[in-house]
Length: 159
View (tube, rainbow, N blue to C red):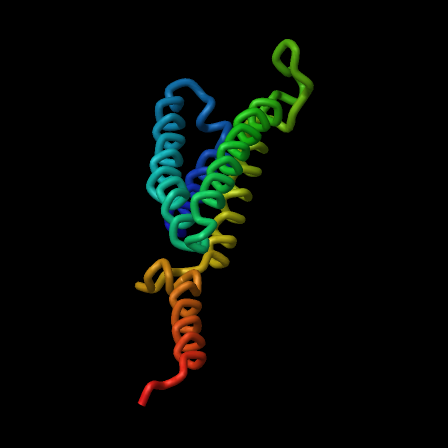
């Protein structure tokens, strides 16, 4: 996930900084290749972990509900990002018919690079499983041990 966000940031900046170069005739194929690399690293990194991490970090009793909420939030974010990019990327001087002026494609790519960098930073806040079982991660194994000890303490010994 870290590598995915980092490389997406690098490729977005690689598109945004020399944006004029990519828009000149003969360089559009390079733009498409660079943009394709951002999609590769999106799927290689953050997209691959969106279904793995929720399955590891939520308590078993709430896992399916929380996983569904996480999936819905991710899809809502994707919709906002897709439509937001469409509106933000409009030329500030000559927007497409029916759209308000935006910040332009180049500035939108800078914003996306910033969002990718934020994703990179937030990745450090995601708990790591470190080889623990799902029950150990959620603390349920400890709850079971505590209940067993409590039950053993309540039962009188028959000696």
